[in-house]
Image (tube, rainbow, N blue to C red; front, side, top):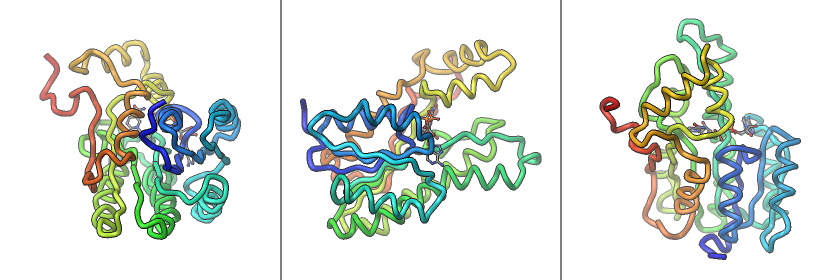
Length: 259
Ligand SMILES: NC(=O)c1ccc[n+]([C@@H]2O[C@H](COP(=O)([O-])OP(=O)(O)OC[C@H]3O[C@@H](n4cnc5c(N)ncnc54)[C@H](O)[C@@H]3O)[C@@H](O)[C@H]2O)c1
């Protein structure tokens, strides 16, 4: 086993499935200890129990990142169970897609609560711990929606744009304190979220085929491919990478149009 993350104690949100779970598996393989949270209690327990058993520590608890008070208690528990945290991965997020003029206040608030405020709630709870530890890392799982727009996905990209803004802002605020804050911007990734997106079209198979056709390499990412980049970004292999964003989309966002 390689030990690229020995000594790292990482809190990961939205870790019961998809990209968050792939990151959890990848970081424990690299010898990190993890504390996993998700609002899906059943799935979280099932997956976290499978991860236990190695030499590393795995803790978990059901929590909703939109509940700032609960998150404070979660961070306290995480530090007690796996030791003082030195990394946070803000991964939990959810699609909220609507036609702009039909977007209700409830949809708007849900979108920003989950995709922006939740990451802030966790960052606000973890940052004092990182300052006590004389440094650490926050990695926000943003999206190519943080700098490009797919029509008919309003207001989700707005929240991801803001998450990228928060990444830059916190990265600058705490750079002198040895805290790095970065974002990772996946394009399409093969998770339940992508399946739900295709299922929102009248012909899901055609929608999926169209997604593949748009990609220069004819395919989308696996969650494991995103997780490998996350391992690098929270490791000590990139100590001067701060307040920036790494895009992983197979080249989709720089393409003017498909061939
Ligand atoms: N799948 C993609 O194509 C894709 C592309 C770009 C960015 N992303 C981003 O990556 C992240 C993970 O996406 P995914 O595809 O793995 O999604 P997913 O739906 O497969 O998993 C997300 C997990 O987050 C949890 N979650 C959602 N809201 C929560 C909350 N309020 N509190 C706690 N847990 C919560 C869900 O229960 C779920 O287990 C998200 O931030 C998403 O925006 C995904």
